[in-house]
Each structure stands twice: as C-alpha cells, then as structure tokens.
Length: 468
Ligand SMILES: [Zn+2]
Image: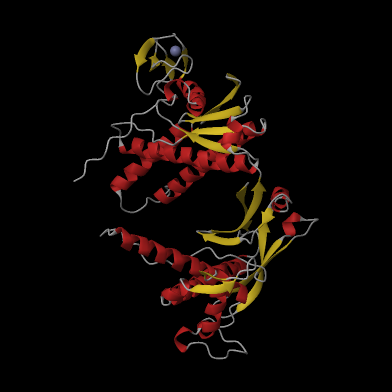
C-alpha cells in the first residue's frame, strides 16, 4: 500500500480580456494576501523559536488499551491550541501575552488562514530545531543550519476559498477567494481558465482532494489542487517471484530521450524509441546565445530576448519534453498490469572538454532525464506500477546478447570510428551490432535480474579501514 500524489493546476485569468483596471487591483490583492500571510508566518516561527521547550514537551495520557499512564510528545493540534491561547484575543481569553499579541498585529485575519500559518510555522520551527540539534551533535564547525524563512505558498482551506462552477458555460467559472486588500479582508471573484479536462480530473472519485495552494509568480497566478490516491502495489520481491513477470526498462539519453524495452520470459516483446525531435540542438543554440550574453554582460539589447526569457523558454521546452516522454512510459506500463518499471540510477552524462555552451546544454539534458524519471515514476505508481532503480554500471559497455565487453562506434561517411559517444554498439565476441541506447536498455533488464555482468558474486569481506 502506498499513496500517489498529483497536482492539477488551474490558472487564474489575469489577462486583458476582462476589464484591465479591476484586474490590476485584484492582482494586487493576491500579492497583499501572500505578503500578510508571510508576515503572520514569520510571527509564529519567531513565537515557536522563542519557546523551544514547549515543542518537545512530553504529555502524559491514559492508554485506552490497558488504562496505564503513558508519556508521549505533544501533538501539533495541542500546540496549535496552546499557541492560539497565548496569542489570540477571544471572549473567554481577552488578554493574550502583550509581547505576542497576534490579534493586535493582524486584526481580523480569518481563522482558517491563521491556523494554516500556525501549522506551517510549527513545521518550519520543528525541522529547524531538529537540524540544529543534529548539527550540534555532529560536532562539525561549518554547515550550521540557517534560521527558517517564512515564505510559503498559502494554502486555501475551506472558509477562505470556493470554486463557483457554471456547468453550462465553463467560461463563466470563478474562484471566490478571501483576500487582503491592504486594509481589510474581503471576498473577491477571480475568473479562472477552466477546461472540461480539469473538472473531470479534479472530481475524479478515485482521488482524494486536498485544499488548494495559491501560487504567485511573475505575471501569473494559479491554484494548485493536490490530490492523493491510495495505491495497492505489490512488493518488488513478490513480483520477482512471478516467473512470467513483465519488466519495462528505460534507458534515458540525450537524442533518444528514452528507449523503452519490454521483456517477458527472457525475450524483448516490445521496443519504443522516444526521440527528442531536435530539442538538444535547439537548446544548444539558445545556450550559445546565453553564454555569449553572460560574457558580454551589461544591459539587455532592445528588441532582443533577455536571458531570463530565454531560460524560461528553455525550461518550458524541457518540461514539455519530460511530460510527453513520461506519459509515453506510463502508457506502456499500463498495457502490462503488474509489471515493474526499471530505471538506471541516474548518472551524469559527462563529456570531457567542452565549451561553456556545451556544458550548459549537457547540464540541461541531465535535468530533463531527472524530470522524466520523477514524472514517470509518479504516473506509473498512480496506476499501481512500482519503479526499481538498478545498478547502472556497464549498461552501455556490455553486450546485451552474450554479456561480453563490447565497443561503441559511429560512422563518419563510410568510415567506422570507435568512440565512447558512438551511436552504435558492436560486440567482438558474438558480432552483435545494435543501436547503443537499445543495447543499454536491454542491459537494464539484465541488471535487474542480476544476469551476466550484474551477476551477484560472493564478495570477499571488506577491508578494514585504516585508522588515523
Ligand atoms: Zn555479444
């Protein structure tokens, strides 16, 4: 049993289609809201850090099972109640501590927002204190953990947020948000860009709904709905016992973003190449411009894209490629229920001496590989497929047919050039010749089943470390 998490994004429409004036004002409210919530969070982070002993307080309770008195750590809900009692004015408790009077500093803040920042602050303070304790215990001189920041994307709990859907006209959909105008808290309507697809996904009964988060950056605002699903997945050990287990192996590369091979009963039953459609080359051109501009530095040239815009463009391209590739991988897995998805533990693709733009581009390619890995894993898991990372050692060097060490080469014209980056693989032992990425993908299965080069040998006991 496990849990899959996914996020569905809903863009708030701040475009010019609706009246410009209202939009700028409403946009400013969103920023004000995020700002005041950051300040409120900072208040509670400081409050908890001023009372570290409270966070580790032990409370006694009577166990239901055997009526014995026991001790346990104070719970987050108890701390929340305690913090509110110390800092918030109520009818029953008219005088909170004068140095920590939240009601005075943040008048009329809706209690759902207050509780959400208290919970955030508690998490931040606790993790900071435990990191600090670990660092002190380690005796290291450097690397002292810094105090926690206070900014976070605000969570919109019930009472601060509602979606108003018009079933007949999806364009008439609004998110009703309680926002801070700079002076007061008010409800405002925000038009959202809704698609039928979004609604089907959001109301999918298989997924449990969590409160959305408000995400503001640059010129965009969005609501991120997070959803969770309980997943029944077999343990890998159990799966491995199945003699007809299907394994789906993925070799992640640069020009071939992914080479997917499916194996059952020792044979490859399906192969799929996901090519990059020129992404690497396209990105390389941008990296050349970026590194040239960095070198020249100074002001942006009028009428030309700034480096920031270029980076954003590159990020979008990478994310789109990763999304598409991971979807393909997940779709292949779905065709074989009960299969196991195999990746190599990610290693960096190195390329010795290279220009700055080439190095930048290589780094981007590595990031795309990481994204494909993470996204495929999530998508596959939501459908009940477990991912295993296998030992990557030698997957591109050994023959997937006979297990001997082979070599990589490429053709330049009609000339065969032996090179580590060669597109083709050749085995001198059994004369097998294949696409190098395909050969690596097949070897990922061998690594999982510990065949050939990956056969687990009896190892001599490790040498004792020399002291001093
Ligand atoms: Zn061979």
